[in-house]
Length: 255
Image (cartoon, rainbow, N blue to C red; front, side, top):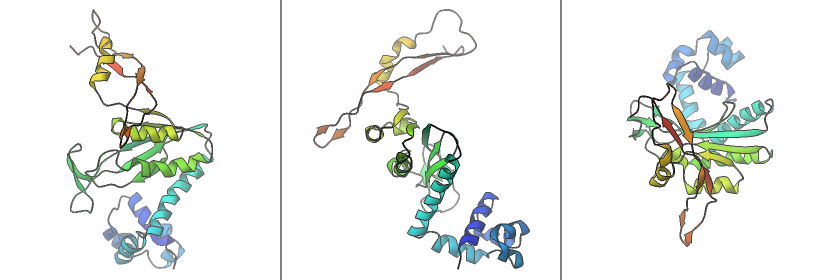
């Protein structure tokens, strides 16, 4: 038995805004859905709620099929990139929230987003292609599972020799992230969390100039070498000093 029609029905139902397999009762006889699913559905109807539910909860979730779904996304991106002129790949990694209602497995309250949700991790390239996504419980740290998400992407592009860049917010400002990126020759820009050291370095930029400020904010930048040392069992393992560029933004309506 081919699972392709069921996969098409599952995917296109979500794309059309139907998030529950109960909607298959109505969609099974929808002419557009019948055409999407395939020729056999045109003769009869698309899959019923029971069939689609079994497919999603018993068949699609096997280890082999989950790996295949992950590979499918990578092949889509590779297909697009083969037709896109590029000399570098810029990877942006960040988390987001996916609010839920009810008792979904893995959902949890997230204090930052102030809701019960999942806390997925995403990685996009500069062309807007989703290079990878990981569904995570709602209460995990923003950078949880970053390596498992990034490593398959690096392995794909590592074979091509293209220059790799990585960007992320302060949640990913971790020594282990820096070490991985440097060991694999990434160029990277990661936002640093505020600290007394950084505040002291830009103290001279925070002084308000004399006179009235223009309507546009004044943005000043200052760069210096900044090094963070991760603790290991036998002492400290150094991360190469990085260039920190903390900005200062002065607005007209600020005291």
